[in-house]
Length: 300
Image 1 (cartoon, rainbow, N blue to C red):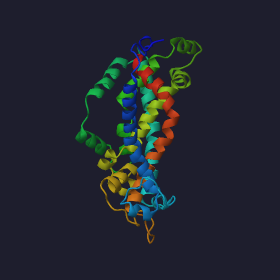
Image 2 (cartoon, helix red, strand yellow):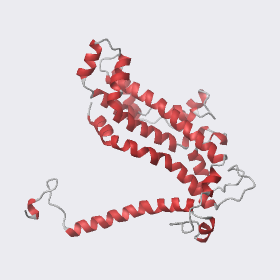
Image 3 (cartoon, rainbow, N blue to C red):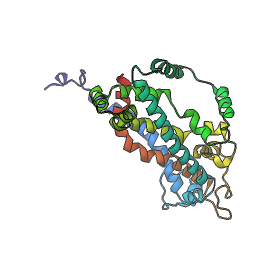
Image 4 (cartoon, helix red, strand yellow):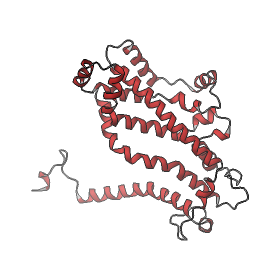
């Protein structure tokens, strides 16, 4: 079979030169992404002597692994407190957001229900118009949420885009299954809880990951609404000590009187602590991405 007879997606396969160029290009992109990440991990685990000798960036630790940077930031100081705050915001915020998004998506998917079209139109309009920074701040202030963790959770607990995706998925559920459950006397709440959600695990997992990553990485809301530094989430601490380059003292880490590792090692350790939770969760939900997002976007 000649090369002209073998078609890939309606096109002839690439030549050897094209394949080599693509391989080199993709390898270069992978190196640009992977090498800095390896440097962050290595710098956080390298010995203080090697970090100082290398000027603050270690690509491979050659003097063994040193956990002193992680012990310092997890010794009960600012970073440990912010880690607990971020965990609370992420878990509680994701749970609330999923509940509100799924229930609203289910209500909007039931055509003919009271207020369905006006409410759907309102959700679609919110995709086009942003409320603005000052009105959002005034709303949070009027509800008495300033300097409260709820100010970071509640204002972003419903995403119009996620509601549309969930609604489209619910619309595509088999009508025969729902009708048979109604004949058996199932209420709307039972239809949602025992049929809708179990059949929509893919889209719920994807939307939950979207919300979880958003809450975990949020810092702007905390920057606006939280004045008490003890309530700062991890990303705001990361911004303060890593992005802005503020030096971390032993008092901030709860390690007064102890010798600290180099500032670069501590900063890279904080960066790793902020990345690891998402890296651990993502592989378990990745398989739902194509099914959850594409099906929800196409149907309905």
